[in-house]
Image 1 (cartoon, rainbow, N blue to C red):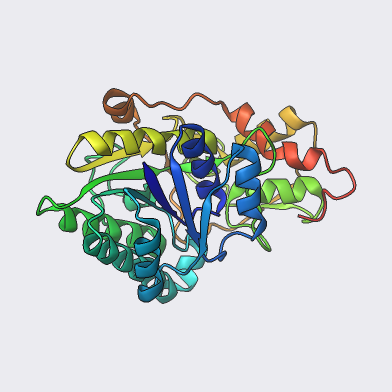
Image 2 (cartoon, helix red, strand yellow):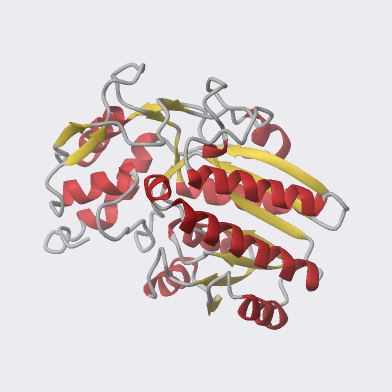
Length: 338
């Protein structure tokens, strides 16, 4: 089976590409490098031990996407392409709505034109609102996201559901919680530009010395230590969930939704403490004000994914911290330049 992976050169996409290739899928990656770099595809190939087709392409490019489908003839699509920073989406909402919705509409139109009937969508736990307490289940109300990024994910879910309503499409919507970690081979990992928006890459930059201290956004939440609680999942577990979703989608018409998380929440300070303990490094931090769009506590109920897909997260927080730091712990001279 040939799978088109949009956004496949990014952090999560790279890991999904590797797991697909391990399982014998023919992978075609489309990416414009807005959240990645040209070396990513080479690292995917080195990690997986095989070649992959690659198109440098913005998924809002209607003619380019049509040409891609004509040339690569995919059997299914895993769709990750889009802007992804919660905080940035609050500051630049129109950019997020324009990009994330446009690239999905373009993709769905191409799928319809070229008779591609299976899609796995990279959704997010941010589609859940503040009205229901965690753990979040897939049947809870959506559309109350606290930020524009989450709103785009909810709107895209609606697009896919509506497109599938006439029976022409099978879809799995995967609501990610907080992916962290890296492949044990050390070649593919998260390397954001500038100051990271997400906790773990921020911790890495502080541990490596390229940023003086971690900003902890809020210590006055109604949580066990006052800092925000999230459900952190190892990116390799997450990637394997996409392989299982692809198999499920091939056998089940219509649309299904699954949470991908561990089912357990960890606070910011718990993650910092685990990172320091596992890797033997210090992560200085300071308390800053709350960040717009953040909720106090977010974690998943993941029982549905295990029951219907046979998937569950198997790697621990210690694994996440160790695998995240491994590529940098080997670079004693270069670790600060990340």
